[in-house]
Structure formats: structure tokens, C-alpha cells
Image 1 (cartoon, rainbow, N blue to C red):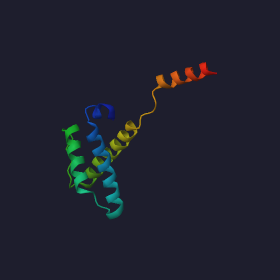
Image 2: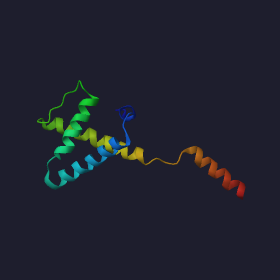
Image 3: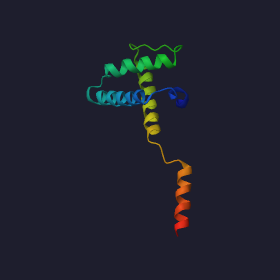
Image 4: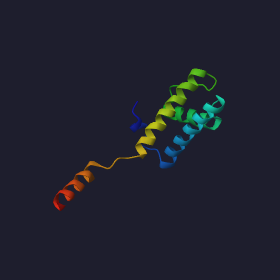
Length: 102
């Protein structure tokens, strides 16, 4: 799955919301073994906006698992994307500066 294509039009707020709802849902699952209702509704809406031809039902256990897994993996991707490493161009410039100073 190409997360870059899926998330290219996401705002920073939407990315943060997906991440926070994913964490909230995981916490709820670990405490009560039930899905967080707000998270589940948001995840299904997100799923249907990306994949309108792949209908999933909240009443189907395997459908819920698939949608939540997709959104959890998407949240992991978004978290990694937000923590961006220093670009290579900047790394090369700092090495040249340090080499000249010696």
C-alpha cells in the first residue's frame, strides 16, 4: 500500500488526529478489550473515503480488525513521517565546514 499517495492531501491536524485516535483505541483495547467508539467511527469513515468500492461493516468482526489494522499502520507511518531526519544536503555542508576549520 502506498501511504504517500493516501496522505499527500492530509493536513497536519488530520495526521495528528489519526495518530491520537489510534493511540486512544489501542489504550481502550488494552483496558477493556473493546474498540473506542469515536476512533472506530473515524477509522471507518477514513476507510470509505479512500476505498469506496471496498465496503466494510462495523458489525463484522474481521472487517473491524482490518480497518483498525489499516489505520494503526497508517498512524505508525504518519508518526515516522513527522519525525524527519536532517536532509542529506545539510549533513554534507556541515562536514565541509568542519573540515575547513581543521
